[in-house]
Image (tube, rainbow, N blue to C red; front, side, top):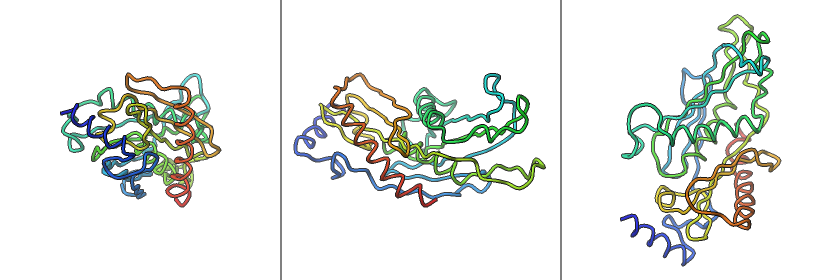
Length: 255
């Protein structure tokens, strides 16, 4: 079955087509809703085509890491719920969930999305800890890009619950950057952006590029056994930064 599916997608590709009739560099329809979880400090529901997930933000006070005593803490996790796919199993996060949550986390950290020093309450003793929880509701492919967008949208709506701790009024989480992830798959030498679940399943390799508002790259992740040429990497970076700018303008700048 996998061989037949790969042959089908490959033959479409030779005709310049994809299963869902998109261009090779065209994103699926995206929807972003914010403030969807009442008890969270910030939240967002994101849909990339058939892929749906919810990102929630919780903040609580805790002890800073010894090597960054004056900075807040970010902890990102992802749940691949069985309701989202027949291939997801209940229980602790599997290696795919752990890998994707780490990539989302890396994009946020390396871009300096949050001014962590502003989350310090008492240096070396108490800081705000930001928990980013991502729950996948349906897997239609490219969970990683949807998760990255959901995390940033949720952070942009989140408030630090200072009032509950007696520190004054609640204030927004100090977000200063909007990194956006864009993934491409290589199928027999052809790069395709925002892959569907079938394209992900049969691709030779997948490359995720997370870029900042100025177009700089803050994180990259490659998966799969295939290799990419230098020209393909440059093409992927150019496409990813262009599409990231489109996503940012349409779905983040108006939050």
